[in-house]
Length: 71
Image (cartoon, rainbow, N blue to C red):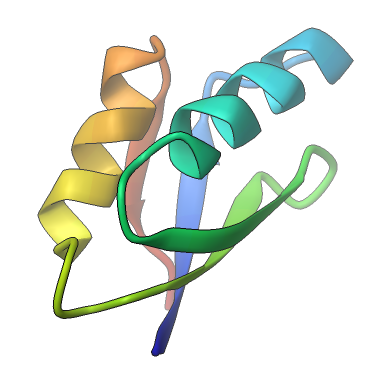
């Protein structure tokens, strides 16, 4: 299991937060995804044998938001 923190841009409300969380949580290999609207971050616990960092970024981007590695 691995943990990743992403900076998410473009979120402005609770609906945005829920949309990003759903996009991540429905990605195969993701165990949990906690999205913090105020911080503009998502923390994801995932199986790094099943899903890559780039696939997680792409899931957020498909939902209509920007994403990059936090840090």
